[in-house]
Amino acid sequence: AGVLTNYETPKRPVVHVFLIAPGCCYTGYSYSNNNSPFYMGIPLLKFPSDAPSRSTLKLEEAFHVFIPADEWDERLANGMYA
Image (cartoon, rainbow, N blue to C red; front, side):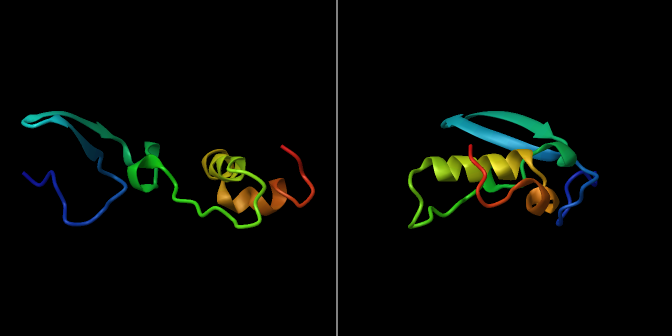
């Protein structure tokens, strides 16, 4: 009793259910501090109209995953190349 809550809390695991066929699923869990904050684990990024290619989105996705947002100004600057 008391396992599920009506609100998010960082102290409880997150339950995952993967439906693979009618009446069949895989279940699992992950810890709140070790899962993606994005819906379905994928950040929804908008493609800039002046971007040279789709690789722009891949770079932005990598920034979100590997560089903490509070370090962007320090670690990313105009004129850098990938």
